[in-house]
Length: 75
Figure 1 (cartoon, rainbow, N blue to C red):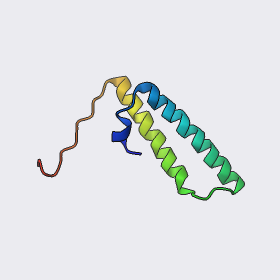
Figure 2 (figure 1 turned 60 degrees about the vertical axis):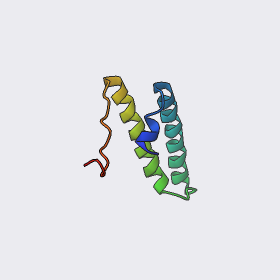
Figure 3 (figure 1 turned 90 degrees about the horizontal axis):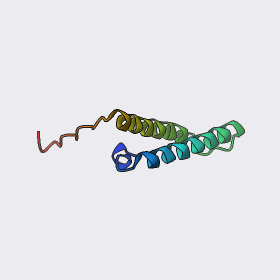
Figure 4 (figure 1 turned 180 degrees about the vertical axis):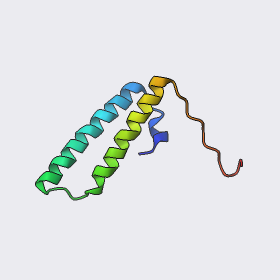
C-alpha cells in the first residue's frame, strides 16, 4: 500500500485501517507461532503499512503538508 493511496483517506478511515492492520498482524504472528503461515514476508509488509498509517496520522495531527515530489521532466 502506498502513502499516496492513504493520503486521500480521512483521519477516521486511517484509524480504522490501522486497527485492521493490527488485527492482521496479530493473526499472522499467531499463524507463525503455530506453523501455519504460508507467506512469512507478509508480516514485514503489514508492519511497514502500519508505520505508514501512523506517520500519516501524525502528519495530520501536526498539520504537516508534504511537498509533492518533482517529476524528472520538470527538473
